[in-house]
Every structure is written in structure tokens, then in C-alpha cells.
Length: 424
Image 1 (tube, rainbow, N blue to C red):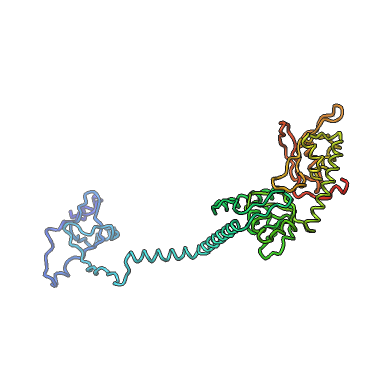
Image 2: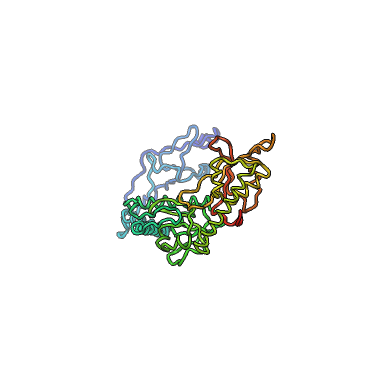
């Protein structure tokens, strides 16, 4: 039986006889080279039970050639034992780098330079803005230091305190600037909390900046530049060394004669002043008349059986030191709720004589017979219902010195003059 017939009867692939010995050699260039059978580099080994791996370029009969499955060239090893290696074209010499190609160091330097160029182009405006801001800050500091060294502090007209010179400020420039900054911050905070939000405030550039930082609306600020001939147009003036140097003694003697509060000392002193649109003489006369009316109204309140006043507060009422808005509110309140007045407080240091007291600590008092005292909440509801002029800016529950719960009531600065009329 032939090998092919045996394979067909068993269902196994036919055995391929192994090559006996190496293939015959032929001289180079001879015709024998063409007689070598062509090897298939992608030929897959025959597998299966009883199969014998081929050791050379197997010659498969033409009738069985189709039975060998085709495989990809990459699945066959390059060489096999006893096989004749396939000839392939000699590899070309490796490509050489052009002589002009830059080194890695040059490439890295170029990349870094381009990256920095892009970054700087994006942030150039930020750098310029930072430099400009730094220049402005240092310039303002230098101007302030110069003013502190050369400008004496003007005395407060009406406070009775003598003005000081710059010699009272510490010699160190850093300490002087720190003193000015602290006074400016305190003044700005006081204005933001105490001054009527309808008032126009005149200030130098640095002080205006502090007021904005204290949440005072910029639309309320009147910037008094060096070219400004006077501070008129403002209703409240924040008097600083810059403005004293700019306007001279007329700032207090003509434009703003009354101080509401003062902060700092020496050349660093800052005062919050009321601007007199009709001149200092007219304003001071009006203030004097208003105090006389407040004195008369206070004396009448001391005879009101629905108003009970602590000893210190009685003296303040009799002296006409209490704001007219407080007086009218307390008289109106006592008609509905008897009231105890514990204190009218004191003015901010640096306030001129005659400036009214704008705060009071009150509580409900028992009425005639067995009428119970009104609660703090009842008094608060009454005050909240008041109209604009008599609506307090501060209505807060607090504890008096006697540990009694009271209602702290306050009105904004400046006080309104002439509310009580000539006779109170």
C-alpha cells in the first residue's frame, strides 16, 4: 500500500520522507542553483498525531499541495535545523544623522526659551500691574512720611486740646506709618458704623481708600485732590495731615469747625468733622441755639411721671446734652409705655463741646397701679415702626451695668439741629 493510500485509510496526513543528507552543493554561478527547490519562508509546520516535522524544503506532491493550510509568514521561525535559509536582500547601511542636526542640549535650551517666551507674554500685564501698584504704595508712603516730618498737627477748635507737632510721632518712619495706618483704619470703621449713610464724605486719596475698604460706598465719597480749592460739597470731612497741609487753618476755622470724633495723635491725628456750608460762625450759632432747646426739653422730661431717669442721665438731660431725636422719641414712647432710662452714654473722644449724645439704654417701667412693664420686644416693635427721621440706626438688646436686660437705641451722626425749635 502506498503512503497516500495509507493516509487516506487512517485519516492522518501523509508522512513526508526526510531528506537524506544535505542538499547537493553547486558552484556559485552554476546552473545548479536554479535546481534548488524554492523554500517558502511562511510555510507552517505540519501538526497532528503521528506527524513528522519537516527538516528541509519538503517536496509535496502536486495532488496533496492543497491539503497544507496557508499560514502567515510571521508565524514561522526564520531558520530551522537542516533547512536552507532563505536568501534576502542585504540590509542597507544605517541612515546617518545629518551633520547639521543640533545636540540634545541645544534642543532643550531652545524648547525652554520658547516656553518662557509664551509664559511671559501671558503674564507680562500682571507683572506690570504689580510693579505699578508697588510704586504707588511706596510713593504714598514716602509722601505720608514727609508730611509727618514737616507738618505740625493743627489744634482742634473747640476740643480745648493743644495741637502737637510731628516731634510727638516716633522718629522711625515705619512706626510713623504704622500710627497713621492705625488711625486711618479706626476712623474709617467709625464713619462706616456711625455716620448717616446719606452724608457725602470728603477725604484725601489714601483716606478714601480706607473708607472703601471699610465698606463705605464709593459713590458717597468726594475725593479732595491737591487742586481742590475748598472741601465744600461734602457734608462730613475726614481731617487728615494731608488735608491740613492742603487747606491750612481755614479747614477748621472756616469750613468744618466741629469735630465728632478723633483718632491717633500728633501729625497722625485724624478727626471726623461736620462741614458748615454757611461758614463756621453760622454753624456754631445754630449749635448753641439747639443746645438751649435741648436743655429746655430735658427739663420738661424730668417732670414726666412716665419717664424714670437714672442720676447720671438726669444731669445729661438737664445740661441739654442729649440728641433732639432721642428726646422726641422717648417722650412719644412714654405716652404708650412707661420707660426707664439708664444711660445716655458718652461721646467719642475728640468730640467738640456741645455735640449731642446720640445713644440711650432704656427698658420698660411699671405703669400706674399694677400695670406690668413693657418687654424689650414691645419697645423694639415701637421703635422699628418710627418714620425716617426718628427711626434709630441701632436697636440692640444689651445688658446694663445693673445686669438688667435693656434696649440700646442710637441715631446716626451728625445730629440734626433745629428739630426742637427755639423753645424746645
